Image 1: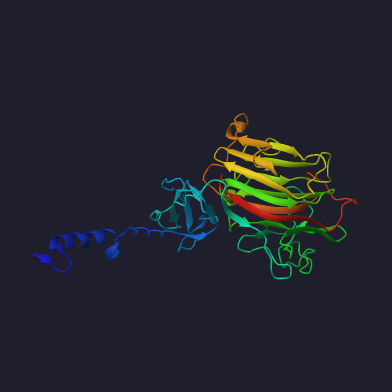
Image 2 (image 1 turned 180 degrees about the vertical axis):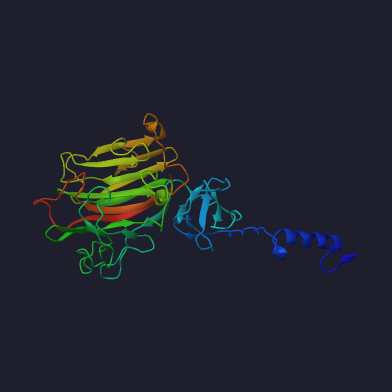
Length: 375
């Protein structure tokens, strides 16, 4: 005899009832099975020339999303999702979510096959402004580090966000703004004796990328105690910390102009910090970093190269083999994570030392554009 609406025999129904009792029905001991985490969503928005920015999200509060971009199945040892990331190559994103008190979600997968050619512009911030007044940098890309913590280098400035008013910050004299000239201006100020303000913009949590040729057209101030820089950190800074996150220093210099003038291109990671992998570029005679130059990084699997003005002639190429002789070193640039951008003008600190009577205030770092191309 069968139960027509369910297709179960009486014996099967009895067995189910006994199983429920054993799992806690009728007052028996035992805990119910854990719920399963909601599967994360994978969405994308257009960048440039068929590239997209991919965002992962979970409907569960407190969920941690793990993902891969090499086609492998993610585990809790995979990259932790921290920010939207650019996809400009043919790859597959796989993601799963883990929520406290729940089992892992099913794995979601999405393939991208843009077929983008080499040397194609796939993302840019041109710092456009047609409003007729100074505006804030695009909040879809840029946030700020703020405050006066020394930032690990005993720096002197108080970093100000757009609209900040504390610690010498002034809404009438912003430290970072896009002018009517279509230029990002990052301004070091001294609003009163011994008080310094500046800005440190970052795309953390908003935009990140892995691999490609990044170009920054910029000119920087050159004076005692000033420390302009454009650089990246890995998204894992939020979980693994520094230097395990990796750091790529594309534009960086301190103090007054030298003869010949210089820029320093460095990489940092576990086991190689400080001056282990740093190279000084010398500008041609008659030019300085206060002139407009294009600072570039070519990031490929196994290597990071830097150039000034001409991508055909990098002045240094760092490779995984360069860290072989450094005890405990770990190459952080090919582990699947994306990196975010930082643009800042520091004042003082361990490397440049403090400003002096020759240091002009205000002084500013100007950025015409930041562009990312496929390799």
